[in-house]
Amino acid sequence: MYNAKRDGYGNGANLAIPSMGEIEGRMTVLEVVAMTSLSLLIKDGDKHAAQQALSAIRRAMRLKCEGIKLSSLDADAAIAYAQELFEATFENMGREATKKIAPSSKRRGSRRSIPAFQS
Image (tube, rainbow, N blue to C red; front, side, top):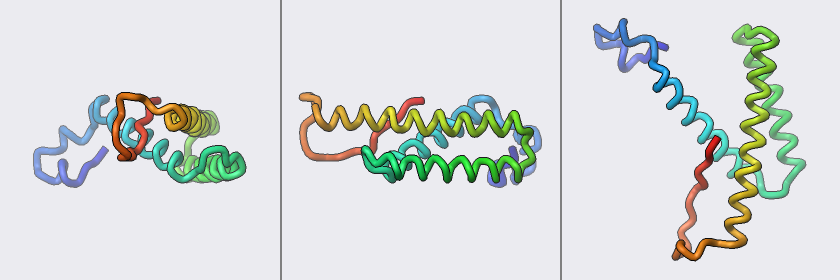
């Protein structure tokens, strides 16, 4: 994967292929950003908005997969992954809602934070 900042400094040709750690790190960032964004955009219990978002994501994934010429099997796998990510987001939203109803006695104050998600 070419990185203009890193690979533009002369001796970067041998560094153009990312390590597995870099790939895993970037995938983790994308998952956390996607799940956090979805949870912030969709209100708890709004099933209609959730279904609309999922339909839009599926359409966008189909178009993107066609654009980069993925095989139908690979496209189906990518869309299945998007579905899993979406479902995990709502599962985590349910956990966060439970925490809001029964807050931990360890936490003090009224400061709100963005929930952290695990995949």
